[in-house]
Image (cartoon, rainbow, N blue to C red; front, side, top):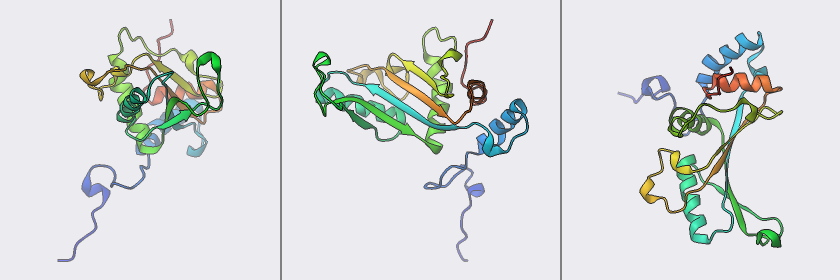
Length: 197
């Protein structure tokens, strides 16, 4: 018998490796929610999540520590991180031009949504005394920045392997035209905000 081509529906996993995710959850659940809240609009005119940027400042650490921080950041994000170099020497901060001062990682597409799902549903509830994110963290461009003091809150990190705990900054970048639109988008994506009283 001739071999038949396996389709996504037959696999049941939602996508074949190497194929870009069509963001079905966004189109179905999130888009319908935004249309209800913002009025009838074409789907392409609705606000959407463009990318997630993760930044880690390494300060004045030696190469071995920076290598360890990079390894843990890559475990958390699921992809390779890029070192950020100092553009000029600043004697006050004891930094020289070309020195690694940070690590950055930009997530898009299916990896972005995978990371967001794990961050919202697993990582944030693990924070001590977490009461929700302040909506004031959304800037005028509609981007949300969340800072974490220690990376060990991520379930991918094994506590025994951590030698240098570090903080990180997570920025959810949108194409929203206003702060209100961005807040509605984040609400639809499941980001927990503090309740207004």
